[in-house]
Amino acid sequence: MMDCTEILDVLGAYALGAADPEETKWVEEHVADCVKCWEELEREQQAAALLSLAVPIESVSPRLEARIISQAQRDKVGVRTEPRPNIFQRLRLGWPATAGAFGVASVAAIVFSSALQMQVQDLQDENNRLSQEVRDSTLTLQQQLQQTDSVLEEQQAVFAVLSDDSAPTIKVSAAGQDAAAYYSWSPETKKGFIRCENMPALPVGKTYQVWVTSQKVAYPIGTFSSEDGTCQVTTDVNFLDAKPAGIGISVESLPGALEHPTGGWMLYAHFSDN
Image (cartoon, rainbow, N blue to C red; front, side, top):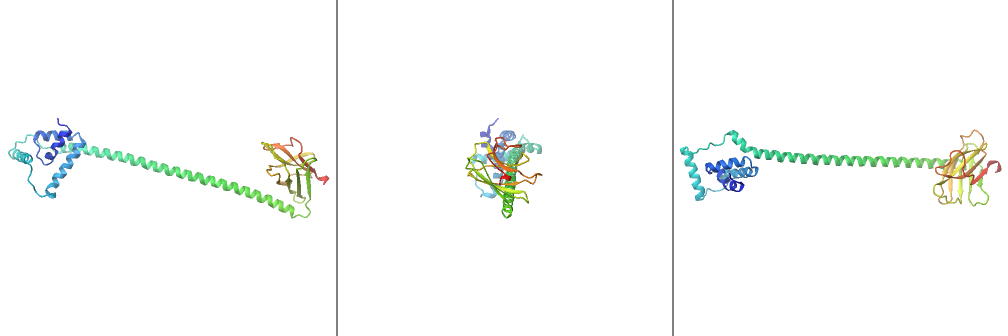
């Protein structure tokens, strides 16, 4: 049995039909199972087919000439003992190259499909990222609008009180403290605001809380912090059925007390005292 190196040496003669019967048999058996040699044979056959059209006719080497003459004589007198491959044998010869081609095509299809899936996944990831950015931006915008609305409402409430000539203002303070607050309100709308000054810094986890009292009960109005010692907090006591009795500020643990001041008043003012 001939190996690839030996087969390659006689492929040229086989392509020209000049290989002897034994070499022909070896070539056909070998290329039936060797894709590499089959592809080389195809190139040799194409070169042989184009040889007569591509180059002038030249004299051949003595060895090739002897092979061609010998093959022609055998064909003429019927010496050839090995029949030429029938259609099924030719299909068999073509199978390695066809299988190789199908194999390459399959691998290429798998690679292309994988690359396409990766591109689709990348597009999906990018779409998800952009969608999340839009959601985050929308949420941030909504929060900013809510804060803007809250500030606007607060400023409107302050302006309404300041524009009311009948709106009284009282000082909310405590003996021995520099901190003080001023409460202005409109008896008509029952809305007002507190302005603070010299409020001390609070420990971590603490907050200032505003209360309004009525009939010896304290009602929470809101909480605030003060980094520079000042504050501005709006109030609305329309939920009270009775007349407010006073207003005070206490120090509470975050997020603030719900029922009553837990540590007593830091600042307080009774309305009847002003």
